[in-house]
Image 1 (cartoon, rainbow, N blue to C red):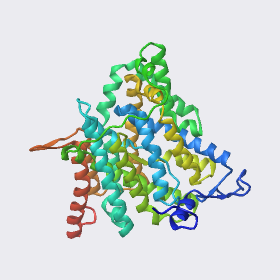
Image 2: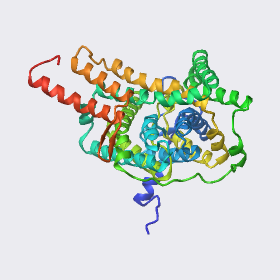
Image 3: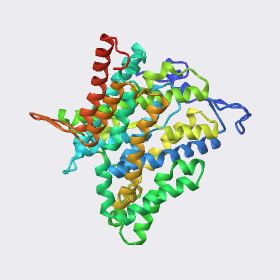
Image 4: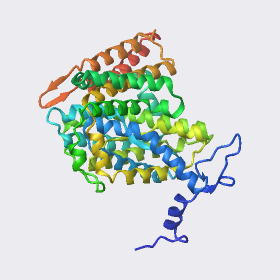
Length: 436
């Protein structure tokens, strides 16, 4: 066995991943400059920034297991592991935290069904991760131009929109279980978002959930039996996946969303740091694919690069990957407390309904934001028809059953958006019609 030493290549790679240049005196950031990815502040300050990253990802990362019924500590555990893997695979060049992706909410709900079949949902997560990793390898070999061709803004915006709005019935189900707590939670999200600034505003959904939770607790509507029985320290609960084509196909739209999220994240970091990170696009997608696959194998939710943590970097001007190593390690340590997970698992239905109403609607509106930012032309009849038809198919959940296979509305809408767009545009170009 080769022992890794500073003189051996393996040792040099290992040490280069865990070494950063000290920025200035390590205490202050010069006006107009930033702490770059390969730099760090003093270790106490680096740990402080890492803790801010944990706080930034916390609300969103825990909402997914709370809404899906997955073990919260298991999801957090694989989130931390995935973040460290991401940093290793991208060679410490892309600062990012990998948290739970909301794009998985709809497919997980559909896969689990009334029987709460978690193993089937995990099989879909593993499938998503494998496909995303393969896409990452393909981009490393061929570049990103083919992805931009396959999912132009009109298509990506449509897919994001239908993923959010397809979940409306689930939001209504939880909300109507306890309308008073649902209203209090939803109103709290709005008031906190309007009243606060900066970081507090960015975590208004999580804070609204806390208000709803505490209100229900005071009213005696929170079951604390599981909290009392849970241990303070123990390993997370691991669950193995099961696989079926019927389930896996539900997760295909998620792959496209994760591609868009990762590419957008790398571009944003590149713009903020002034570094050309295009050569890391494939690595980033491959890394997220590996992290998502590992999470699915063990019982956690799929991951994605987090925009929430971009806000921390912009506010602190610290882009050091050292802070993300701290965040990843911190998440793993937090995941070792089942009592912490039990507190989250006891979240009352009404509070979940209030959060879901806001969150799922926001996901849908993000699709419209993609259209607006990319100036999608809806005077073009092809764009208008594809977007409108796919959104309705997704919201109304048009389902097609063929033998043993079931294609849900979200899958059918994605197929219409991608193949319909390219087919109609090919016909329009063949006819010389610029406004098909």
